[in-house]
Length: 301
Image 1 (tube, rainbow, N blue to C red):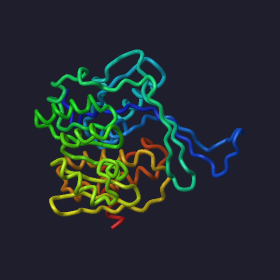
Image 2: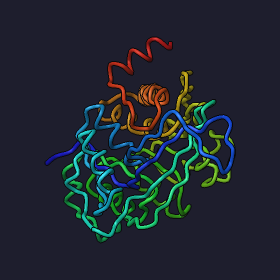
Image 3: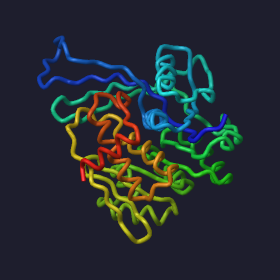
């Protein structure tokens, strides 16, 4: 089977709850809603791209337990191919508790990787890269994803990196191997010891020839194109939940890349897609289609 995108990275199950404005410790509180769905950068990215119409496959480990059943069902819900999931009964997907502020929509994440097995170099079959137009990896399954990036580079398969957290030396290695690197400002600051996003971009550009983009939530995103800085403001919406907004940006950017959008149009499309996702509770509760995103952009010009 041929894919548009092969995705590798952290596989997570999210438990999301909107926290009331007033909480009394040691007491029970009835709240409006609790939802359980898949999460994490790679997982959300795979589902977002698939919802946009790309043939997407997820690579990683899956076990024989409740969390694994939820994770697989979530991929199936969005028609993400699971034929490359490697079965190991003992493996448990990472689990996250996501607290969403009822006033601002900002989320705080508590997660555990107990029982989780990251993808390693020996788990990878090089021929998998012959079946895809694009490789999409995060910064969590570091060793395996570095190997995937090496193989992709050798085979001329373009790649997108969602670099969020991890060993700085290994993240820099990934950045050197990748083609399109999108990272939050906090991660860029850690890797470069710079504060300003433009200074971070220029410093990272000394390490890689990749297309570099830095995101910073409500403050927008920036890209370095030669000597030019491209800025994409964040769209103003009634935010319900920021969970998965960065992941949505990456997914939409990948879609726009495969559709041959220019860099500014990729950033515009990705920002609009993420803004729409933020108006719903949960990172996978709603993904707009291309036409809806285009109408949103027109209405916000």
